[in-house]
Image (tube, rainbow over all chains, first blue to last red; front, side):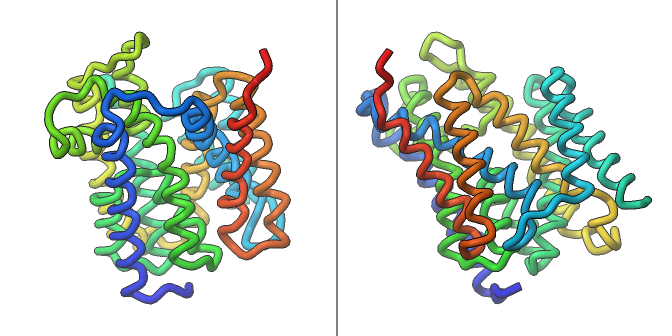
Length: 105
Length: 211
């Protein structure tokens, strides 16, 4: 861990301020007005792109190398269940149980 | 408010896991608890946390978190016409936008039911805050949390959000490209960079589709 105690507070407050700012920006500045279409096409794609990057790296990478672990198996099973439209609560519970189960073996 | 309950339940579990993982990343109990209270944006919190967990700096963590939040800009623009009042009141109401409540409040005709937005967000905020406090407080008492498999919670949650985002071919390609770029950069770039670099894939939205 490289961040100091003060740096962690800086990170938390910075993230809180930026999140509040981003959430306020749409309703305040752009109230009702339309944005150029290219702008919204990019912001709309930001979520699937980043969510995918986050899911993939949390599943298949550890630090600076590729790796798979018990959680990879747990999440893949949950992914199949999500695909079959099982409830999110159930999928999360199964992912945790499978992961914990494999690590116990 | 009842519509928000299933998300509030998963949010609680997710927030507990955030509290636990944040403690492991070097946050104090107070820090890990306050994060959920003041940030209240799960994906941004986990994006920032995953950057510093692998040794990235504050700037990279804030950037990753904010890029993840960029979708709230689009959501805020969409709800804007449905929110009354002056700038301060509108800004305050905009804080209620989270993924699930935004989707639930969407009437599908370009307008939003703002009371549904606030009502479904409220239980989620309560459980989110409680979860991070519980996770932060009892995280260390759980012993080896790795053994409990809590790290499997947040990929599943984001996967469920991701699935709802895959509306058309363009978003599916963006997701595929983003994942590929991030994974390809893992061995060759400093921590945190793969997720940031993946966001450039969203620029493919600039290309007007020729249909």
